[in-house]
Amino acid sequence: MNDTIDFIASATRTITLESEAVSALRQHLNGDFVKACELMLHCKGRVIVTGMGKSGHIGKKIAATLASTGTPSFFVHPGEASHGDMGMITGNDVVLALSNSGETGEVVTILPLLKRMNTPLISITANENSTLSTSAEANLHIGVDKEACPLNLAPTSSTTTQLVLGDALAIALLEARGFGAEDFAFSHPGGSLGRRLLLKVEHIMHTGQDVPLVSESTLLHDALMVVTQKRLGMTAVVNDRGILSGIFTDGDLRRVIDQDIDLKNTPMAAAMTANCTTIKADILAAEAVRIMQERKINALIVVNDQQAPIGALNMHDMLKAGVI
Image 1 (cartoon, rainbow, N blue to C red):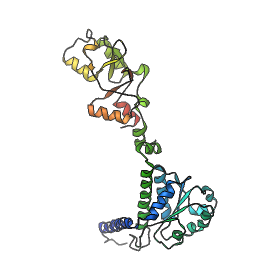
Image 2 (cartoon, rainbow, N blue to C red):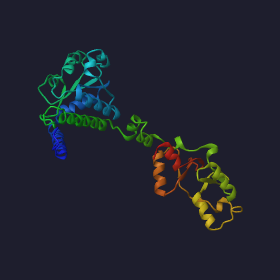
Image 3 (cartoon, rainbow, N blue to C red):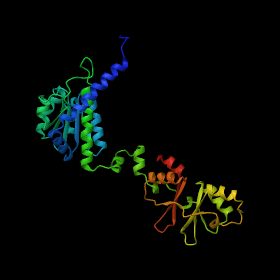
C-alpha cells in the first residue's frame, strides 16, 4: 500500500486523460458516423447492442439511452448469443458491437451469423484494422491508444469515449426523429418528468359535487360553510346562468374580517374577487402550477368554453400528484 499517494493529483490526471480522449473524438467523426446514424434511423427492427466485459456495461447504457430517446433498442450478451440468444436478432435489426480491441472472441464468433442473416453491423473500436472493424458497414473509431489507468490495462478512457460516442448517436437520432419532450415523457411515465409532461389538469381536478360552488346571492356565512366542507380554501361564485362571476378565498375572508363586513347579511357578489384567474381542463398540470406561482395564488377554478366552472384544484393537489 502506498500511503504517500496524492489522491487529488491522481484524480486530476485521470480526468485530464479522459477529457483529452473525449475531445479527440471530434476528429474521428466522419462518413461512417453518418452511415451509422442512417442505418439506425431506417432500421425496421431494433438496434441490438452487444459487447463483453466493461464494453458490455457501456453497451447496456447505450441501449437504454437509445430506447428512451426514440430508437427501440436492447442489449444482447455476445456470450449468450452463441448459446441461443442469437434468436433475439433478426435481419430487420441493426447490431451495434463494442470492443476496444475489435478482436473480442465472443463478439467475433457471432459475426458470420450476422452476415448470414444480412443484419447490418456497426462497430465501435479503437483498432480500425481489427476483425470487428473490417466486418462492419460502419466503424466508429474511438482513437484511444492510452488508458487513464497508469498500467494502461483497466478500461477507462476507452469506455468513456464509447459512452460519449453512444450518447452522440442517440442525440443525433433524437434530433433526426424530431423526438420531443412529450415523446420523452412517454418513455418515462413513472418519473417526475413524465408527470410534468403528461399529466393534465383534467386528470387531477376536483369535479362534480366536490367543486365548491355558490351563487352571487349566497350570504357570506353560508358560503364559508361551503369553503369549509369542500376543503379547497376557496369557492367559485356563479351568476344565475351558471357562469363564473368570481372567486372567494381564504385571503378574501381575511379581508372582509379586517373590514368588519357583516358575514350574515352580505351576499357573495359584494365580497368575491371578480375577474379571477381560470384555466382549462386540457392544459398541463405543470402549466397550472406555473400560473399559480406567477399569480401568487394557491387555487384555480377550471372552466369550460362558456366560462362555467367544471372543476377546481389547489397547490396541495399538485403536490399530491407529484407535479411539484
